[in-house]
Length: 440
Image (tube, rainbow, N blue to C red; front, top):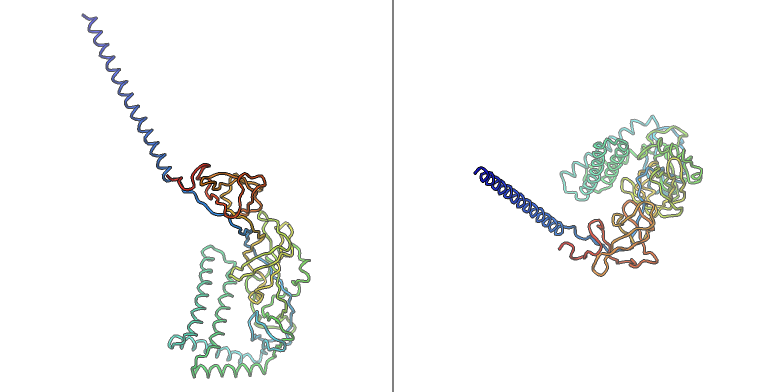
């Protein structure tokens, strides 16, 4: 009897164990099914949302090496000394073209200071009255002069604000000079505008009368030759000229870039007899000398073309490299340029965005190259081949941080040329993918 009970218990235990195993097997199968279904859904989703192939046609385009540099400006200038001591009142701004025997400035003697102050007071009264009638009357032309100047001033204000936020105070003096220059230019334009106002006409006539009287009693500075007038001098004119630019060493350049006046040079306000007063130049050429910092240097070819633009947006196109050599301070570069001399006549140091080593070829973004490292002369790219993606090897003839110039290898099975369709996102696609149906 007891033996039968034992057998029943064991049978019951075996049944329970079998049920547990079955439940575990079912749970395992359900879990595996869930995993398989989840993986299938993930694959479907990934395939559905796989990045589309980004394509472009190869074109002949230009690449270059761009640098932000601080350059020393050198011109062929003739310096003229003051014949008397006194306060200087220039009749022309920097960069003005003047003729021979033209009156350039007055040197106002010390005993004429009261008359000079009266002239300045009348000038301020004219300016204030002009603004008053601009606000109260309908002078569209004068209003436009004021609006144009305000827009230019806003750009300078924005630049100052950005520099302050970035704790960069090195250009504050340049910005201040720019503000003064813009205001002086606005005042000059308004002075020459015909307001057809009786009181303003009387003020202008009185101003002209005072200026003539002051001029008759002052030492009149007259140009001995025609040329571009430069009233802002810094004492470096005779040391820094094109004739001795070949003797300029890297140490000299480094010193000048550190110590020369940054930004606009201040016009001479008071002069002593025999001191430099102004310059004239008949040359249309100017030279910019700078370093490409060590670590960023590239081989810059003599006689290669250079495009530059100043921080203020003044273009310096089609410059020519006349000197390029490696130094401890970086690559020493001299470029010659024959435009914008008038606009930079009051500078010794200029901040430039320089574009060197311009070359043309089949241009492709650097990220579109496969298995490419700095210094390599070959790389692979994905191209369209019969509606599908295929890979070909190309020669890399030049490159910068953003783009590369490429051309076909002589033995290439899939040659490239203008209008070849290239894949821009090779990491997101594979060989054999359809260029139109990858996301399906």
